Length: 99
Length: 99
Image (spheres, rainbow over the protein chains, first blue to last red):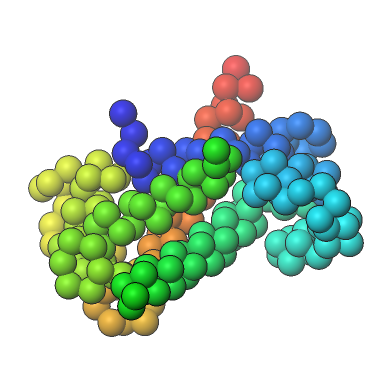
């Protein structure tokens, strides 16, 4: 039985390949796959952003500028999002504590 | 219902605080908390490494050299471990494919 941490790491790998494997290079997310992942995994509603914004996310992630997001670039995104969630979580706790 | 990615991010935060909150600064892992996490979350058997090795892991993670591992430093560890698992996973698949 994997630990909570091992399970979370496994899930990150599963999530990546469930989108990267759909078309083209199955080890990388192309723009459509990245857009699907942002929508389905991070609840970014269709229409709440346009393709120029997906383009912006893609180019900010795409460190090696090959037009796709590989697993390492994906993990950098997840790390940044998790740290942002953590900051929000700490602020929330500290505000609760000061009531 | 959180997505698989959201759930994994939540679990990373849960794991960190389930160890960091035990003693001292509840937002950081001290050496004992880091050791417990390595043992319990990454199945590193007691006796399979000595405290000098925990010290090495600690100092390699502890970017700001405050003697403790904060959430950002923890996420860097998780990212590196997940990327290593991913490399192993890709090699495994490629070897399967070439049989």
